[in-house]
View 1 (cartoon, helix red, strand yellow):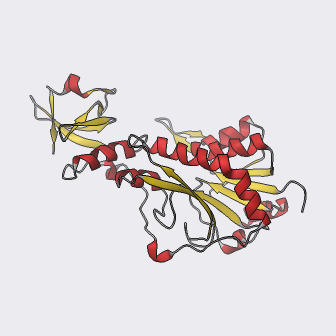
View 2 (cartoon, helix red, strand yellow; view 1 turned 180 degrees about the vertical axis):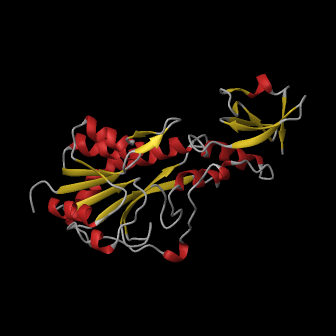
View 3 (cartoon, rainbow, N blue to C red; view 1 turned 90 degrees about the horizontal axis):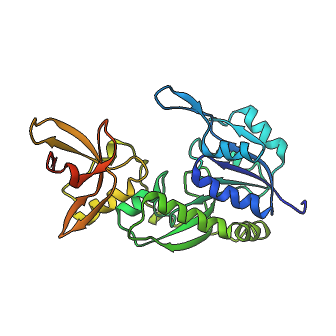
Length: 291
């Protein structure tokens, strides 16, 4: 094995870049290439736009592969790189089949921001906040053919702030992972057998969130609604329906921030559809929340 192991990095979000930056700054691995998703059409004019990982790779002049599928051409490219390890951080589907898993000498390592086997799935951060968990963990695990299912390399526990948004949660988790990244990967490469199977009987799975799921359920306890508002930041953003007190017109209103006072949820920053964000106390006399 060369003195510096070859590593391929898979990622597609701003949180991937936290770990990617750590890899670059510590210069402990040879970064063979970065793999990310194809550019996506964004905005009103559907302009093809690179994701944060693609932008980061271009800014740092890193070798970059963009793909949305693991076809034969892609597999050949990876095989030619003769990697020792693949690291996956916030990449998403498609999932890795056994042929790809066996490609690097030390398999594929994923970093997942939950205490696996709890909170499997694509959006573990918001669900942990919604469920008002007090603690979490960032899990390094070896990928197998099932999502979030493979043996655990190490888990690093951390406390969840009672005011954390999903963005806060993910930044904390991946910054923690980046701080321990080199030591964990080093130990794993030296002792790859030191992994532990997950207890699948304890597994929980939570689905990926969408805009429809961001509607507030006013039958929930107020503490859960407040947590829900934080969990939906920065996307898809919690929303509810309001009624114009004069015209009775119903509108969709996003609740960006909220507090609890006297066991009541008090919206702070809100945004009516097609309007700019504003303060709820400023418009409260014109609109009524429909619960």
